[in-house]
Length: 122
Image: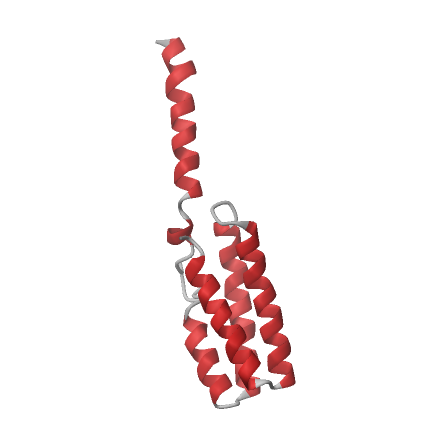
């Protein structure tokens, strides 16, 4: 019985835990509260950029970045590092476009952020 546990059951359980962990990105990216709801800010940012309300858009972007920082530790083991980096780089570019008050580029970057978010966990 001891050899069965040591050589078969324990490795199988460890593999099962890792398989679940590595495939949990879709579940883990969903909000757990009000302060980590990343998708909530997509529409708010889009509306603010369309209306050229730059200070409001910058505020929403800061809240989006804060929510993103809360999500990253949960998904870092189940998502590709390139996708996480791509999201962060897009946030940085969007911040620059908002500072420059470039509506078209800001909207394009926001669309890329939304697409990257949709790809996380798939």
